[in-house]
Length: 141
Length: 141
DNA sequence: TTGAATGCAAAGGATTTGCATAGAG
DNA sequence: CTCTATGCAAATCCTTTGCATTCAA
Image (cartoon, rainbow over all chains, first blue to last red; front, side, top):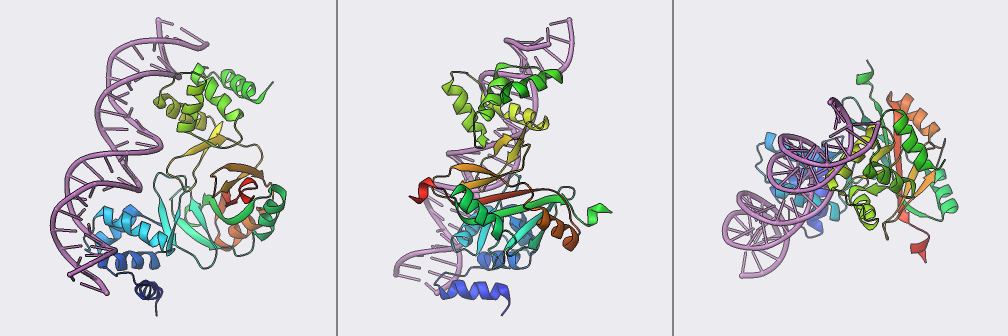
């Protein structure tokens, strides 16, 4: 079962309704390697000739977030982006030139730092967000 | 010379004008240990009975950012926050309970991770942003 | 005097809400 | 049939812009 079907079946199994918009938004995420904004999703659906209102997209994103299927991430931008809630721990590489966003997986690299924050500041870390800003391979040429 | 005076004198020396609003916004930053939003600054000025328009605050924040005196940071929130451009490398501890934001300084802890991103993904890292979400000391009680 | 800073009103862009209707199960 | 999802318009919130006026140097 592909990952979009997996999510869709999971939702159905938990008694949620499956609509065209919901299905297609989930597919948009499973087929994208980078975080998507509401506008980006609207654009993807428009290209597939699936007419959807932006209100629906915003509401669907909120729904998927409450279901922990996607999560919100926010860069130094005006608008929010969303991405599939990662099983592995992902971080972002944001190109300051072309604005492209790539992912990198760093599983236990921050464990030590987190432990230090925990003891030094008595702050109980639940999660962290780490983004790298710089120049991507293509823009370096 | 205190740190606000230091910034103010630096600006004057580089030929920038010094107005009441500018001076007080700089002071708001040097006297705060956590990042400030435009609304928060407006509130601080209002309490000091310094009448200022929000437009001025937004414009001033933009100005201070171009002068590299402050920098923008954005959490999973709707509105932007700004903080003094740090000499040392700061990160944030964001309490998911009381929303308080504290800072932590981690100078070279990410060097190794950055190096790996650089070689693995051929991404030239210029800077990074790292935030920890969790429960602060006070909220753990 | 002169260009930068200010205030106000209005515009903008992203996101949310109210309400009536359509559609999934 | 019932309750959720949808579309549309309007509202909200944060931020920016245009323009005439004030003010620092």
